[in-house]
Length: 401
Image (cartoon, rainbow, N blue to C red; front, side):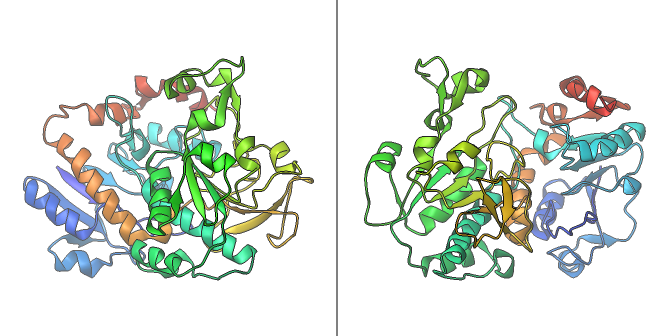
């Protein structure tokens, strides 16, 4: 088995990598029957010499490998027919801009394994950069708050070396007695919570958050039944009631928008789920939210003020609810929005280390144990020039319908 680590070619550049040099050494030690080659790259957070000094082969041509690992979408001209590829294809939600990518993958008889489709038997994702999206997104949320109110100006996360540096910068800041609401208990939400906990902010129940006044900054972390309610007025007993029938629910987030100063959105928003923070809520005279850190970043989705993705270079913009348009975040009537869609890129070293550890634990063994847990079989999107049965729902998307 020959594994190849590809050079990231998508623009804007992404310095992350699936495997750090140390993880590749571990892979070769645990599976000496495997060959690993790394395509030379001048942008990778770990330069060629770091790999080379640990005995990992660097090459300009790795086309003889069997399986290729990348992070972002691979440009179609660089896809080699009849090979296996692992990368984030951003096609499983029928993203229009990547339709051609999936079409070419099928035409070239490539086996595609999307990092997002690597799940366990309960359909829970096993690997991803979500934790680091949450960490950087929460940091950016506080950076936004400091800039909007001229309280402090902390550096961009991308200029710092590690997540410990982010914690250190935030701990130095003095916050007023604001309230922060965080949605989501997955990897993204829990990553954001790491920042809040690292700042030693007080966590309170949703009831106390809604009904009490505090003399210090506090946060609450809420789940789907906290911000959604059944349309018929009956009470849902468990989260599965919402996940199985989201069409029976409507948003109940307005009670939080009336008391929260910062909204950190770390939830997963499934197809058919109701919107969360609506324009009507943001227009309301009693809406208190002034900063939204939309870590999940679904444009024109559940968060009304996320009208576009922002960038690492320019992470913030203002949203004027009454006119539904973008303005300066300094505009007195605006909501300040952070909606960077590639947050882990700001911590490429930490993110790569965490990703590689998960990949070694959950995926690499499947290549050598006959895929006894079905990890590869569930993740496989294409085979023999066709969509696999699990992803047959994408056929109309591939056909351009």
